[in-house]
Image (cartoon, rainbow, N blue to C red; front, side, top):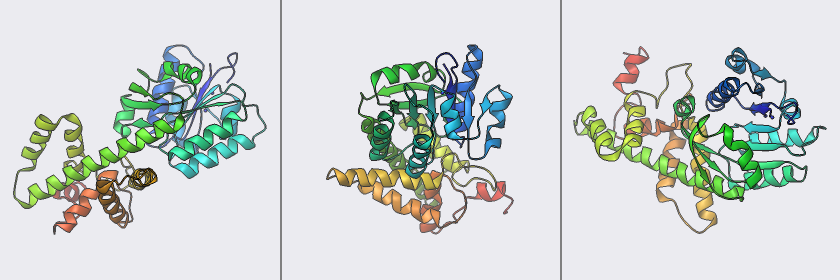
Length: 325
């Protein structure tokens, strides 16, 4: 079978991917490494900037000039896109191409509104293809180590066809949510809200500790020993400067995408008559961080909270790292 980050017919099979951003590239590298180790067909891939796929070429993957070209050569197509608009445009390009989509499986690992997943499934189903909504939990370092958590919903046969390429290849585990693709997008939205809320809480704790002259390493130890590895990792994103990446370096998790994700959560809650109070606070701080006008991590609300407390947006660690002091 052929796979892509887009995939071909069983006889000419290849896997493929579309979207080689901070998440898509490490996922594709892990997928191609697996295909190579099992003597499978090489991964087909495409990206707006094809040179982003150079590491894949070195591993034996095959580049394609466009998404329709990837789809034409593949059976299973993994999509890793930035937002709902990108998903809509990509599905539109696929539908406008003349190649047959019968029997193909599209796996969207992007974080989008549940309605976007439902629309994509409807359009592709009319052309004989299957759509699996499969957003993932984990920032780019987690993707690099193949420890992503996949949240999967879609037709059972299509889901079974992708399982050999998920656990142990790109991820550590799977949460299956039946055939309604909206469900996986909803759970991802809920999880993103919880993650953003935790980051807000940990960032506020660090700012409070600094203002109260509590040692930062003591706070980090408390988070690690009493609240677990996730809280400790979030803490390190702040204290080790990941919240404010060095010039020219990609963030772990893009701030603009965080605004989109938390915004989806707030809207989905409103749609069912609920209210995400913490989500609204987080969204306000994320939007304030956007005003910095530079590439920042989703944890950059820490800098906003620092500034509100009379501290500089950048910690001393960040200033020293970037040669500001």
